[in-house]
Image (cartoon, rainbow, N blue to C red; front, side):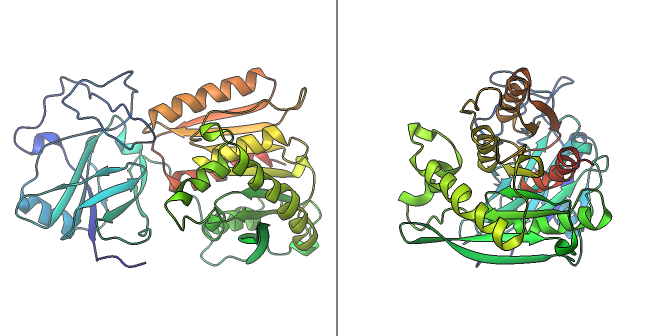
Length: 389
């Protein structure tokens, strides 16, 4: 990955600390978004549709160059009120992606870029985000910001005691896919084993630090993790392959979903059971994912209740969910963020539908957005709920 260096600071300021802030008449006009938080409504304009009570809107007002220099020179995060400003330096245009995904605004005459947003309860929010320039190649490192009233981050092992390995298995038509796995320390001596499957297997190494802490502390029974790397987007035509493999019936086509499903159930799972010693059967097996990966988790549990007993889901991006076999039930823990109102509404409706069908369901609405940092943090609570002793 090659990027130009970016100097980044996260600051929060009071609207009244600067001249001519927008008049909000005691409330914020909130964003209406199409997916995640890919667009952000101007705080001074009426919101389209139903305004959720804590989705962010964008403040279009400028900061002085002196203030920007002072803010960017400070380390960490500063929050006063419910207004948050992200500041970065670059010769190229910048945009923020992650929990919020919008372009930044350049401060005229400087190399500073800002994004100022406001939301009720921002003091308790958590944001994972990346800053991309117009010349960035690859995915930049994730920045993390946490308000002073936000829950503390879960503990992550500095050094994983278990084992992380990578294997390559035959996928289809001569293609091979990498499968990453994590086994807790002492796995060979354990008898009460559980396993967590996931798409987006590239996250296994990051999530292993969370899972390792839960395993070594005894918070959950010994739990392994197996993840499949998504389809590589080598060509323009292949850029939707991950979406097609993870979302049942996307654009009316389930062929790539079924091929990926067959690889998982017919190749990966038998290999993991044979090679890694992970358990079989729904009682000790769960599927986890966020966004498209969350949709995959739900559909796999719906279609294969004999293999998976629980779907641990965050911010599912697609709501075409097939019916399961008659009389089959499972556990579903769904979570979505207040900064992604369309997806949060759909996830809540889906949770209600699954509960009415007789499944064990828990739903959590967190203060944040479409954010892999929060999905990882939610997993801690989801695993405790799913694999409780």
